[in-house]
Amino acid sequence: MGFWYFLMLLIGGWLVMRGLFKKSTNGLIRFGTLVIGGLLIALGLFMFQDGSDAIVADLFNLW
Image (cartoon, rainbow, N blue to C red):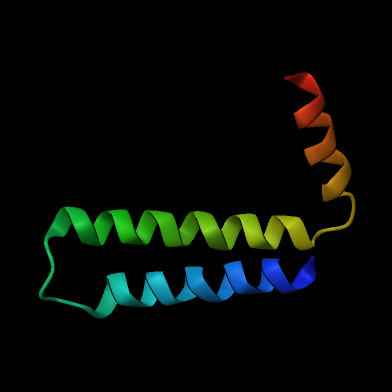
């Protein structure tokens, strides 16, 4: 599973860099790209932490 979390980190980093440095796109698209990239990075870093699998399992048990 660590491979997929690392892939989320890479894709998130790529989206953030694209949102920061690509000047020819609309401002709303750039903002959306930055937000989605930041969320992917945050989720990837969270899932690498110890005990995150228990937290996610508890969240799924609430539904």
